[in-house]
Each structure stands twice: as C-alpha cells, then as structure tokens.
Length: 183
Image (cartoon, rainbow, N blue to C red):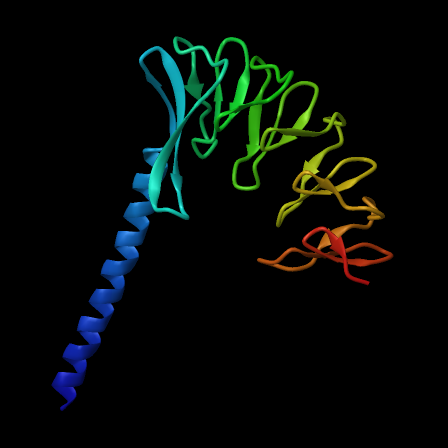
C-alpha cells in the first residue's frame, strides 16, 4: 500500500511541476512575441489579449517604421522612434524620446526630462521629487497618486503603503484602499 501511495504522490508532484513549467514557458513566449513590428511600411504593436486568448495587432499611428524600437526593460510595452514615444499603440504627447526611460514597467511608470507618465498619461511635472512607492502608489512633493489618479486629501509626508501584496495605505489622517479613502 505504501508503494502505491508513493507512486501516486510522485505522479501528482510531476503533474504539478509540468503544469507550472507550462505556465512559465507560456508567459515567456507571450511576452517575447509582444511588442513592435513593421509590416508593409507600417508599425504595429502586438500584444496578447487575455480575455480572448489571442494575439492582437494595432497600427501605431505616427510611428516611423525605420527608427521604431522597443525600449529595453519595458515589458515590451514602450517604444520610441526618432520623433516620439509610445505606450502600446498610443503616442505619449510631448514626450522627449532623447530623455525618456521606463522607471517601473510592472506599475507602468515612466519619465522624460519634464514629465512623469503612467502608461501614456502625464501625471506630474515634479520629476525632481516624484517617487514610486508600491502597490500602484507614487508621490511627489504635493500629491499621492494611485496609477494616474490623485488620492484626494492624502498627506505625502506621512503616507505609507501598509499592505504587502494589497493596495492598503495610510497617512496621519486616513486609511486608503486602491487609492480611495476608507475612513
């Protein structure tokens, strides 16, 4: 009986390892097949649609097919050419390709010499004092942000993210969850 249980346990363990390996390889494959592509003189951004389980390509309007490149360490989400910067298929308005870099691709923050961006949206021009916190939060001298949204009434001097793996935070006056005041 003990040998049978051992065999079943081994079979179960190998099955779990095979599933985990398949998921990891799938994620790597999907990420490596996303990004910017040039076809017939046009630039396209290719990404995987998690809802429909298929790749989608969208034309990147205004991108130069001879100079487009994916920005390193950007999760294949950001690109630049000789004239502009792109997040997916959207051009970041007034972004400077010469000074642009990705700060934290997992939280989708980036910057150039004059502006901080969340995805393709400028959120602050206080580049000197801005910093990424965690769990989607960031701050500058006067505001706390959750993604692109200003967390109304939050105090930057006392604000801390309290939940590891969650979006709970607090300052000297209130508690917050996902950028919303909860007390």
